[in-house]
Length: 219
Image (cartoon, rainbow, N blue to C red; front, side, top):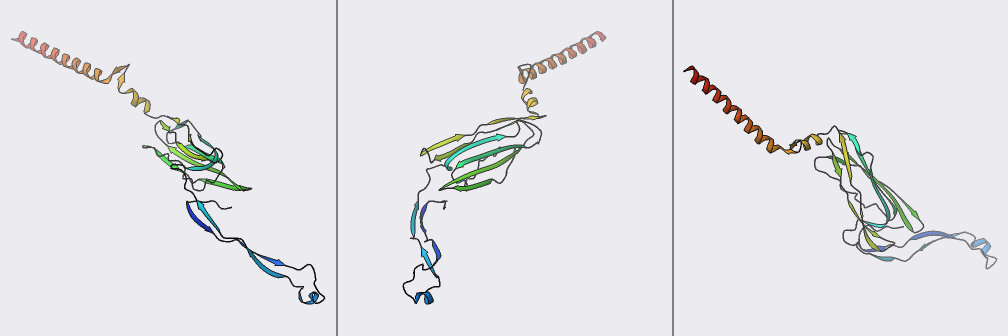
């Protein structure tokens, strides 16, 4: 079976096979002495011209697939690995699939090499694709959803699969403190600063007045 990788016009060379011919019937008495040896012969098929059409724009996969994306943990300690597993299986070839991009600013994300198993059943190709993405973080984060565009060979339609997003909680992170700093008991921080400044200014004025009164009494 040949699986096309790129669009274009291709020539398939003839398939050749060597066979051995052996006569089963004798036409004369002399054939028993001179024609008893088998003869080798090469047979070949015709040369084929094949045109591979390009995929529709933005299509990533061609086939009929089931797709799952799931992390091993939703809560983890600081810098403990969160492993996100991407699994695709079904009818179609997946050898050229580049995977999904999970780059997130501020996170250490590493994509493992994909594991691809393909098998032929009759005149069809079935594939199993697995790839893991490892996230390391010291704060809470969200694994975003991703889109996979598929040309479904059964419905002859373009489909978009949206993977789920996952909120990851990191135990011991500073997210909670950072979020609570801007306000205290529901009062904005700027209000607390203004009140503190006015209170400090009033205290300073009161001290100066007391010192001025003491000087006047001494005189």
